[in-house]
Image 1 (cartoon, rainbow, N blue to C red):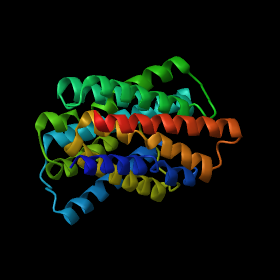
Image 2: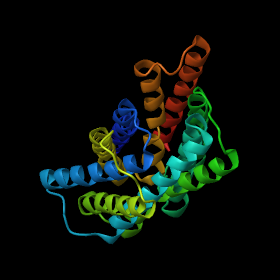
Image 3: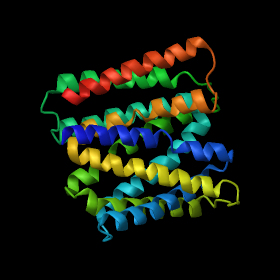
Length: 280
């Protein structure tokens, strides 16, 4: 069971690290539209997967709350990236997701029978690896203070978004569709409040991003049901390594042997942290 949970978390990392690729291919800069159509893609794929897998289509308040939390955190993260730059914002957000989800799982839900020492050591290594890998890109800071505050808020909400799943003690089958619906509903409200202007550019790519993200989301729920929040979410944050590898080999964003060695060093530290967390 635990091995299945770890594999599911690694699968979540693969898809979560890849979901921005279609959007980036579209080269659109309309982030609010991206969030809305990504939310629509999540909802439509969630409906499809739920019917395919026989999951419940009944509304679940815990799933709706989690979905709304995710949409809010994602909207905040987009503004954080715009103000702080991707190479600074994403590692900071990921580190706070790791720390907050680990603390929820370990201290509130008591999910680490192997001991807190190994858990804290593993999470520390993962955070360090995230920081090393994430600092390889180019920084484009417009408003550092605002960006830092928003990145912290976003990371804390992201790290807490699945707490309702644990509080409600509901299964993935009961939770999944309502999570997707909550994401779409909140994304729609955000689009209306911000008076988002829609255009044809990037719609299909944004929908595809939502589908890819949702496959990762489903795998994440499966991993948490098997190994808990304290392990599942930190392992899934290997997504940042996947994203950097896309940038390195597909989009050719990182050049120079020094930066590539930095990515390799960060990746090794990340993997060591994940292995240790598996024994915690």
